[in-house]
Length: 363
Image 1 (tube, rainbow, N blue to C red):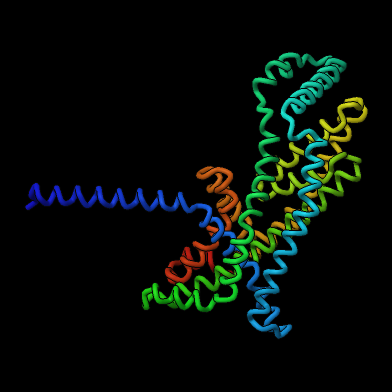
Image 2 (image 1 turned 180 degrees about the vertical axis):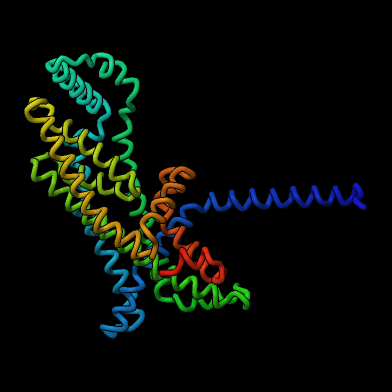
């Protein structure tokens, strides 16, 4: 029989659980930077594990020396990136007036006027569509500088925590076996083998994925620069960099990058004639970007999204689409790694399920 005392105890327990959950979430929110450091360190560990094994097995490095070599490799890459790219990005961003909202608005309105003149010459009334007042109220001119500043802010913020991340990564790599043994103590004996097998497979698949992703972004970055330089677009580095960063977003990123490149190409050539120079050059740049995406979609992406995580391209597309509708752009970015982790776990814990067998047959 349910008594008032039992009901009261149940309410107290429920309230206590809610308070505990709220405190736990608040605690996680307070240490969010540390969690980010741990996540970045884990990714660097996954990427560095194959390099560590190569140095130990092929070049006969001692474990600690191999770990230091991997960390030194990371340090030199990031230091080189900061010294070579960040000053150029900042200077070219200033040249392109990407940090000046008023200049962006002025140049955009000037471009709209040129488009209006071009359409009027072809007997098309575009006054309503390209009315400067409507355009100013519809477009947020802070979008471009905010995006660039957020990218640069992320790089500088990462630099502030760089020492902490390298320190954590060093011990993740050096004491990987000790950490795994400690984790074993927390794992129930009945599930120990399955969990450890899952961790090993996840480590392999995600390390392949992240390495492939970095290679893909670098290839796309180089190809974008080539396209922009071929057509004589000023500030090619900053445009190629921003468009390459956008390619982190699967499928949607390249489309945004093409539109972004077209707009910046036109803004870079405002002193030229719209019909004879601006429009043809913009079309050529778009064609060049589409050719880059054709190369990327048929060579880079199948290797990364299919072979590296052992999933069918249609399967990956549907997962990214669902994640995008459910969680937005962030969901699209983390969809593939998270889906890979879930597939490995399902395969280990539900090996007899026919559907699981079908989607994990290549793992």
